[in-house]
Amino acid sequence: MKELRVPYNYDPRLYQIPVWEAFQTGFIRFCLVWHRRAGKDKTAFNIMVTDAVQNIGIYYYFFPTYSQGKKILWDGIDPRTGMKFLDHIPKEILAKKHEAEMKLTLTNGSIIQLIGTDNYDSIVGTNPRGCVFSEYSLQDPMAWKYIQPILAENKGWAMFVYTPRGRNHAWELYEMAKNSPDWYDECLTVRDTARIDGSPVISIDEIEKQRAEGMGDELIEQEYFCSFEGFVQGAYYVKQLRDARQAGRICPVPHATGHEVYTFWDLGIDDSTTIWFLQVIGKEFRFIDYYENSGEGFEHYAKVLKGQEPKSEHRKHYVYGDHYMPHDAAQRQMGKEAQSKKDIAEECGIYPVLTVDRPRDTQAVMTGIALGRNILSQCYFDQKRCERGIMALEGYQTEYDEEKKKMGNHPLHNWCSHGADAFRTFAVGYVPRVVHRSVTDQMNLMNQNAGWG
Figure: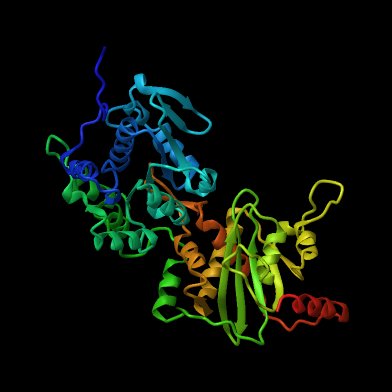
C-alpha cells in the first residue's frame, strides 16, 4: 500500500517553516501579516489539513464572503504550478466532497468547511477544533468574537492570515499579538521572502513595473511592504473619519435629555439590519448610539428601541422623533394583508416612519456617498456605543480587481455595507426643518414616547 504523507504535494519555503514549527511546538494563536502572493492560504490550508488528518475534529476556513472562499480556495488554482488547492488533500483520505456547502469529510471523520464571515451565524452550535481567518482585514470582526470563547473552552487553535488594510481591527489584533507571549506573530514583506531556489517571491523590478503602470505608492506599501499606514485604497470615508478623530469628534457623546433622537436604518432581508441614533444639537450631528442585528423582525427592533428587549445589551431609553428608512420600506408585500415594512414597523410602535429615496444604481449610490463625505465634518460619534458603526464606515470601500490591479466603480458588498448604507440614509434623507404636526400626530407621538421614555 502506498504510504501517504501530509502535507501532501507541498514543500514549505524557508520563510514558511517557522510557522509550522510554532504550530508543532504548541502555539494555538497565530497572527501572520504577509505580503501579497507570499503563499498565506497555501500554508494555512496545509496546516489545517495536516491537523485534520492527525486529530479528528471540525475545522473552519473563514473568508470575508462565501464567494471569495469559493473563488480563492475551493476552485482556486496555483498559477505557477497549475495545481488546485484542494489537491493538497490526497484522494485516498477524502471520503466526501459537499459542493453546495463547500465542505470536505475525511475518512477519519474530520470535517473541513469553507465559511464566509458574512454568514458566520450558520455555524451556531458547532464546536470547531481549528479555524483560519483568511484576509482578516476585510472580515467582519464579530466572527472572531463569536468563535473566540468556543476555542478558548476546547483549547482549539486560530490562525489569522492577511495583508493590511489600514489601521482597522486587523491592525489592533497584530498590535495585541506582538505584545502577547501566547501568540505567534509575524510580519513578512517582500524583503523577507524568497522561493526555494533563492529567487524573490516578488522582485523589486516587478513592483516598479506595477508602479509605472499606475499602482499608487500607498497601495504598493500596503500590498508588498505590509504597511498599516496611509489611507486604505478605495475607502470612501477613512479620511473624513481620521479628521474626526484628530478633531476629537470620536469621543464620549452623552445623550442630551430634552432633545429627540432620530433613527436611520438599513433594512436587511438575508443580512443585517442596522440603525444609527442621532441627536441634532445646533449645527452638530451627534450620533449617540448604533445597533445591528440579523434574522429579527420589527417586533425585536421595537423592543430594543423601547428598552424592553431582555436579551439585548443595547436596550435604548430615548424619546424619539422620526425614523428614517430606505424607500423600499414603503413597498407593499405580497399576500392578503399587502402590508409594507413601514406599516409593520408603525404597528410595532416605531412611529412615525419617513421613507428616503435611496436608489441602488451606481450613480445614486456614489451621490449618496459624496453627501456622506461632505456632512461628516459636522458629525460626532460616541466612541463606545458607535464602535461597530464607525468600523463599518472606516472599512466601507470600493471593489478591488485583483487580476487587473485596479479599483472598481461601485462599493464592495461586505459586512461594512450595512452600517454605511444606514449612514447614507441619513446623508440623503435628513433635512433640518421645523416640524408642524397635526393634533392627531402629536397625540400619537406623545403616546408612543410615553411608553418609550
